[in-house]
Amino acid sequence: MTVYRDYTRARIGWFFGLTGWQLALLATAVLPVAWSISSQDWPAVGLFTALWGLLFLVLAVPVRGRSMTGWITSTLALAVGTLAGWTRFRARATTGQARTEEQVDLPGVLSSVVVHEGPPTGHHHRRVALIQNHSMRTWAVTACIVHPGLGMTEVEDRAVYGQGLTELLDAAVRAELVSEVIFVVRTLPEDGAARVDWVRRHRAPDAPAQVSGITEDLHASLTAATVRTEEYVTLVIPESRLGKVAREYGGGINGRARALHGAMAEVESHLRGGLGVTSVDWLTSPQLAVACRTGFAPGDRAGIIDALAAARTDTAVNTDVPWELAGPSGADAAVRHYSHDAWNSVSSTIRLPVQGAAMGALAPVLIPHTEGERRSFMVAYPLVPPGRADRQSANSEFGADLGQSLRVAARVKQRTRNVDETEKVRRLESKLARGSSLTLPYAVATVTVPKSVRAAEAGRRLDSSIRRAGFAPLRLDLAHDVAFAASVVPMGISLTRKAA
Image (cartoon, rainbow, N blue to C red; front, top):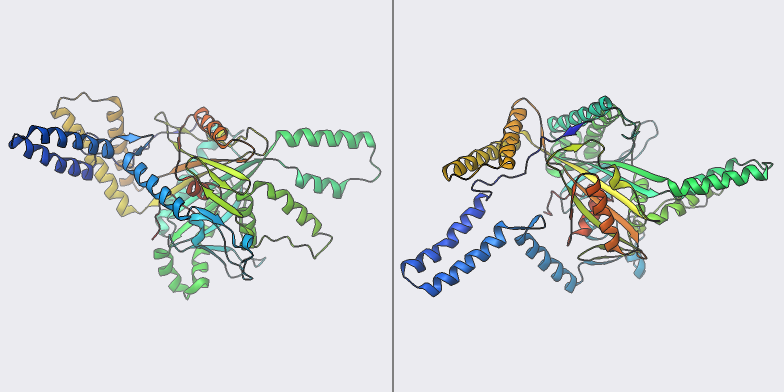
């Protein structure tokens, strides 16, 4: 089995787990206590000591995987946004204000996205959709891919896939254009719409009734037992990098598109090579709109399939999804879930286990458990530039060595976890010195259920599936809307970037 366990924490505290700014604030907060002791004002000593202890709890003690400072800030931000109406979204089409031109009308972090059609390319003159995010100052392109999966794959083939992913990320770092590679997988119980259309077109009119009945029974049983999987890969490029390269191609949208096509071709070669992807289809604007709409409303796919079937005989049938209607009619961000149209979504991030992560271990997370339930997850690989990677590695190694020295000087027993963390940091430094690239991957899983199903129960089932896969779930309360956009809608939304 291919298992990877050579990962470390993003930051290692210098002084018994505390970072530099945490140590500085706590040390400064001790000064009033020392001043009160020197003046022998014992009531003030007790008061300042209690305040120092409260500050220590807020800064240094994590609550459910996050700092208390982050919880307080997020809670206040959500409360203010709810009172001001910022967390509630209503589409322009529901108020009769839909515009004639194609404009994206999406909620939350997707509201600043603009989709451009690139210049015609290839033998079929396809116009690949260029996703521009104004608030994040990034550009993105998305491809729908088909992969045979890892269920029946041998250990040697999994090792080849792992090496192929490494080569893809290393090549992206060396090209110095792509800043993040995002994989999104969505699974949904099969609705049978495509098969119904195929049977209607291929059924013989003189088929025996008994054979037709057996076929219908098989279709009903297999549809209830199967799931449909959609896989996407998105390349995210910051404007600061793309703008410089685009000037060599004449600038503007066309210049950026030509620069992106070079990155797309390089990534596609690695996808079809070492990763074993059998099909790579870079999405056009209409295809991306369909992926966005089915992300917010999984039940709409059957209607789109029926429209495509009707368009074969009636050219007047409209099969496209306008961008004005690609989002939800309404969406509300709550504390424990995200509500959009007739659906609720709950998201959890996945914490890597100490014993390592096996390739293909996330498969149980994608298995739906109830009718109409949709599971999805995203795995993002933010790419760290070589210079910044060297500085981060050096700081981590310095922090690990300093922490180890302080424990030895204080005669504090070295725990196995601290020893293992120090060894991992040193191995990371060795790999970077030999030319490997640095990435800080993370994963987010999301379950989407109809509003007739309790969102809390769906969230518990999702956390149970994550634990059964060998990982630790961390519910993304107060941020389910952003997590949904990142893990379900393949438009390059990242949790590692902040709005400019």
